[in-house]
Length: 256
Ligand SMILES: Cc1cc2nc3c(=O)[nH]c(=O)nc-3n(C[C@H](O)[C@H](O)[C@H](O)COP(=O)(O)OP(=O)(O)OC[C@H]3O[C@@H](n4cnc5c(N)ncnc54)[C@H](O)[C@@H]3O)c2cc1C
Image (tube, rainbow, N blue to C red; front, side, top):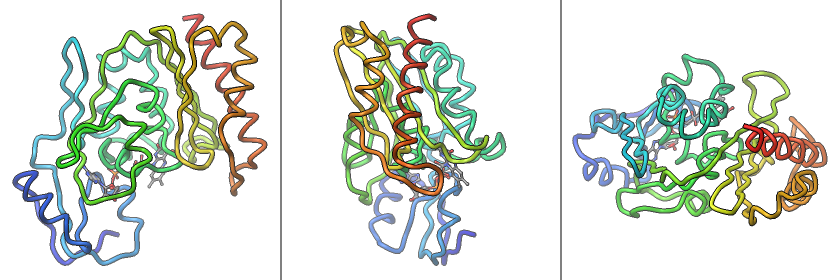
């Protein structure tokens, strides 16, 4: 349950930013993760009145507001077409429809969770976060940045000519993933993201020539990430699954 002394609907990003500088205050997205924390907050800052719940698309890019819920991402026709269904594939196993109707893309990316399907798929694309004070930052850089008190306003995806694919492996449907894998091929290169190792998603890029032998590419790329064991899987098992997911995802993209 979310416990707080005060709950404010911010009237501007500046107001939200100023309130968020106090350590005991917090921004709320969809409250999916925040409510699990056993803490009494000072002021909870709600961004839902700031028009950040829209996805804008033009010839060059998608601009996705931080308060867009995961099911709006999942059902956006333009994103689905651009990513050949990969965004939908990345989100469809996250808990259930009602949950995805409430949790936000801003909370998901800001959280930079190790298990994140959301971070994994965005990292494979040419994507950026727009921070209120920090400006525009490449997604893979943002993933490594320490948590601060800035506000994530938008996520931007540049429409590069890429073919994109997504796979994940779960011990049980709707559980956290054991391994996530997102691949983007285009402009003479391949980018492969592997997440839930269980540490957060990371990316490897190679020239497209590396795909002359897909099996070899999958083995080498899977080996280049580090893995740890936890209650869901051992490090060795994760590496094996990563290899299988990379190979299958690349083959699916190439054969489509
Ligand atoms: C039981 C459970 C299972 C899950 N399974 C998966 C899964 O399989 N795969 C997956 O990818 N994800 C999974 N998630 C994560 C989920 O998809 C969301 O990413 C998560 O709930 C956070 O989104 P939210 O909108 O609820 O954010 P909140 O819980 O509201 O916020 C999360 C954090 O982000 C901060 N924040 C929110 N919005 C902003 C903003 N605009 N600017 C700055 N900071 C902000 C908050 O202060 C807080 O620290 C799971 C979550 C739960 C609770």
